[in-house]
Amino acid sequence: MPRRLVDISVVLDNDTIADPPPMRPKIVYRAHKETAPEVCQFFPGLKPEDLPDGEGWAIEQVAFTTHNGTHVDAPWHYHSTMDRGSRAITIDEVPLEWCFQPGVKLDFRRFPDGYVVSVRDIEAELERIGHALRPLEIVLVNTSAGVAYGKPEYVNTGCGMGYEATMFLTERGARVVGTDAWSWDAPFVHTAERYKKTHDASIIWEGHKAGRHRGYCQIEKLHNLEALPPTGFMVACFPVKVRGASAGWTRAVAILEA
Image 1: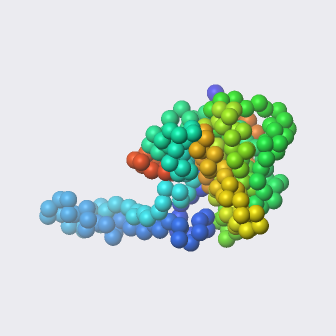
Image 2: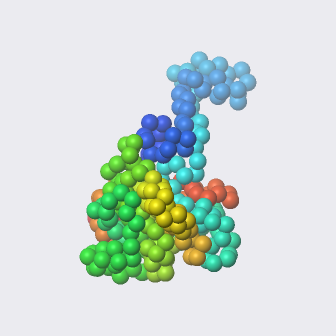
Image 3: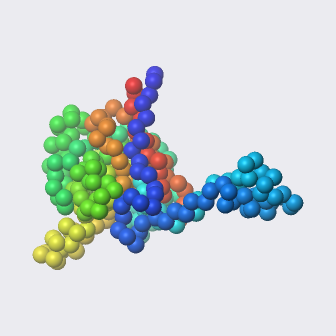
């Protein structure tokens, strides 16, 4: 049966505003003429002009974190332990079966920036789309941050998933969840305002910290979720294996039957 592939990943470049300034990637592009002398070093006596059109290879030198671009966070990112005491797994230890499963999209674009999604919000959305969560389904959260990607306000845009909402999903078997926002949690600028009033440390990174109690992975900086139906698609989000790392980049793709 024909399939339609929907790219739900963002692109990595030097210009798109998708992270705070200290965390932005730096990519140096080196073109064919520039690298021709390097090719010659492998073959004594070869000169750049001996190569077709005097060209070597194109290559890029990249300096960035495992959390730039569309990436999968491992439980190790959130805390040193998961599942109430076990060592948290790193990205190279994430089971592959977690990363290729049916997807479910929850549309929370209506919620204001900084809003913390509740269990009741999830239940209402599942009722609206007529779906009961099944184990290992990949739950994607479509927020207002999706259309803000690349703009200065992106990092501070969109709602977030707190402790209770995250535990609700993982208790029903979710092991990979995702968002088109900068973070699974509400933007820090809004959480900081709440903390200033309450001094309740439990609200800080609460969705991530739920991983202490049940190990799970997050896909962050997804894109184009507006193009997906609520259900009826597969998600592929295999992370790059960086040994002992807290995250790995992914070319996340939604697969729909045409």
